[in-house]
Length: 158
Picture 1 (cartoon, one colour):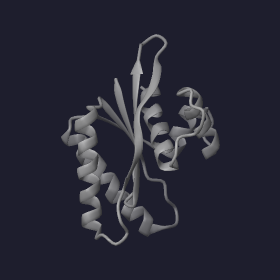
Picture 2 (cartoon, rainbow, N blue to C red):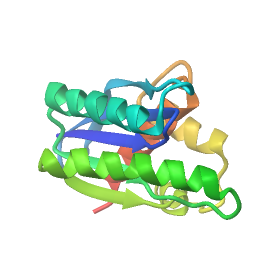
Picture 3 (cartoon, rainbow, N blue to C red):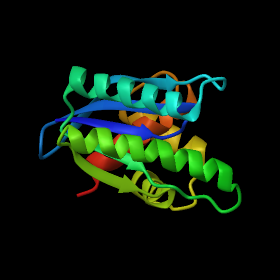
Picture 4 (cartoon, one colour):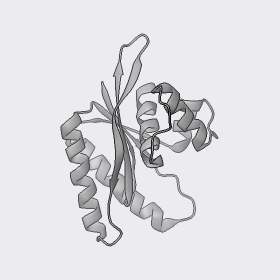
């Protein structure tokens, strides 16, 4: 089973594709990871169009069975919350159009699922990603590492 994890953003959206094999003792491997980036000089509409186009191309190329998307959790910066909400909308639209099973997770749910602790820090989450995939180093950039964590969360949660 191929699972796509998305860490949404307008400037940078992280993606991580993982493959889950086996049912009793499943194993996981990274298929691909990276970021979809847009230019600050582009209009909001152009940036969202790029995100939609690139995400749709990823879905067509890898044919994931399900997608995990991080839910918003903002308390102070309304401008950032608005732009990330727009990016999430694009991700949800592309996923729905592709017929993917969609799972949404708050940062707390991701931390609890991966680390067993809702206040885990970024380094603890990255260590779980690194150990699960038997990597020498934590994947970079951070948005892509976060997306791999979200994909794992989608794989591990029912």
